[in-house]
Amino acid sequence: MVEAQVVEEEAVRTRPGSLWYDAWLELRRRVIFWFSMVILVIAVAMALFPGLFTRLGPYQGCNIRLFTRPTGGAVFGYDTQGCDYWSQIVHGTRASVMIGIAVTAFALLISIVLGLLAGYYGGWVDAFISRLTDVFFGIPFVLGATVILIAFPEHGFWAMTLVLVVLGWTTMTRLMRAQVIAVRDMDFVAAARMLGAGDLRIMFKHILPNAIAPVFVVAMLNVGNVIAGEATLDYLGVGLQYPEVSWGLQLNAAQTYFSEHPYLLVFPSLFLTATVLSFLLLGDVVRDALDPKLR
Image (tube, rainbow, N blue to C red):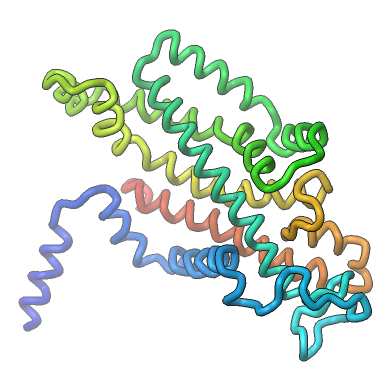
């Protein structure tokens, strides 16, 4: 029985697998991976299904006279409008997390397309895309978003997402281009070209799977950065506006009452910090798992 188990374990260790399979074997042994995943699953569930965590809507059951500290009836207390603060935090998760994921998804798509074109074709295509990337890369993320959002004050969830996508695709595009350049001259790509494979098939079938791993890691890190950026814009008063609910807006409203009611600032800060930190930790651990030199 013991010998059979040893043989099975040896077969698993010696079985040829893909980079992602080997990374998964490494990830599932890391405590940080599971810790980050638990927090992120809870955050995404709160964003998609807030009814699982609170029975109240964002502005349901509010009473201005209930502006009090945490009590037995409301463990997170009440905000300045007399709304249950736990319910506000739960509903505020949607804007922060969904904008972070949406911005990163669209930016990743843009970076894949532009990075493939620039790295594969080179020449004037590479020069044009590289100069365009440099122009947008030179615009500070938060400052640029602040200027644009102030210029167009009537904006909501999708306008915020569009602005952050426009300013957030450059780093991944640069990395994608570098990865494609490193892969395009490899023997398996040359063999596919000699066998008559077209450019699209070579790019998406042969180059992309072998170039996407580092870009995917940066994308995971980028989700945390976008969430922090979105909360910063809301806090500065140029992001989402009332009656929207977000952690940044809660921090903005809490700053006036911090000395008397510090919980108004502490609770959303803890949720924001935990979510951003989890994305950053997850990105780091995935990067280590995908790079054999770092194991």
